[in-house]
Image 1 (cartoon, each protein chain N blue to C red):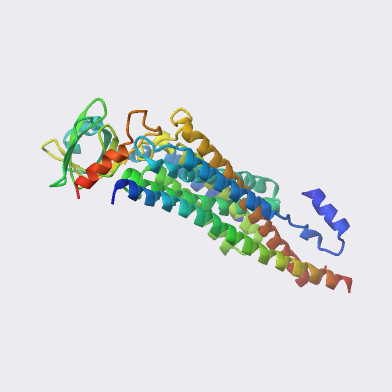
Image 2: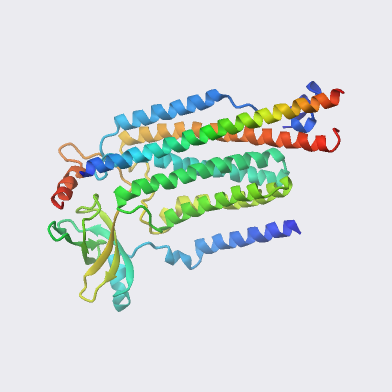
Length: 146
Length: 53
Length: 245
């Protein structure tokens, strides 16, 4: 009797794991969409809460320290989405970094972000000789925003 | 506060949490171990006392 | 295990044979492992240069990553001894699995806390519900449940069987946690390797992993010693209640 319960319980847990691994959840555990995927959704992707991830297109960052207005372009190499956000970005935010923004894609084709996260790669290297750690560079921006 | 200074706080917090957990768990084990050993020795003596009578 | 029991009953006839002498863990292993952590951390902090993106925040790696590895290792021990318990029904295997589960849960909680402390400055958020963080939390909750199950079950055989089942199946979550960053799209980055890590960080990380491994070994051994002592005391108390036979 007790053994039956254990085997039954084990079967349920294994089934849940199997479902997690191979089932429909695989689609839902995608934490963010790429610009290409978001744009491919067409009007379905407009106005609904969604996360968008990609790289900050180098040279696209426009930061107004007075109004705390931040504009940049997120790219996946194939497509691009312009993003608008307010407030100081996380300290690691900069040109060329990976980012994930939370918010809604507006009808004007601009993603209105309510949250901004930096996504790091798995590479850890000190700056090459002649380069400076970006931390110092960011310090200047943060100070100018205060 | 500059970024570098606030980062230092996070680094210190990470190492502090690590040491609190390691030393806290170690302290718990040593105390619990002392109690378990004492209980065991007491019971063992009591048992050998009973049997030799 | 058998020779130990025989040795004990023959050399020490007065003692209950079920109370085969529990092992004794030397306190020196604690000193050595704690010392190793101090040396490894000092070496890593002093030798690693500021990272290109993260600056000195990279140094949190030396505690967060080994804590995660020791979580995985501890739960692997739980898996191995839970399976062997289910197969051979040896009481000591149950006690060893339970000891590793408590140590693993401790490292698991530490990993989560360190991840949050690192995530706030590095990502801009303390927590997100991505596949890596969520599965790590699920792993933690499974083993908190495991420990609660043990605390609230009185019958030792029932306790052992149930926790062996939960421990073995719960540990299957470890490869899921590890692979989560490869299988699914997450905010958490995939694992670094010597190819993606500057050599100046690799040595510090390895030393810290070895040091924390020593700590983990001490923790599991000591916890196992306590579990054996407590169980032996219980057996003697039961035997006494049965009339001293």
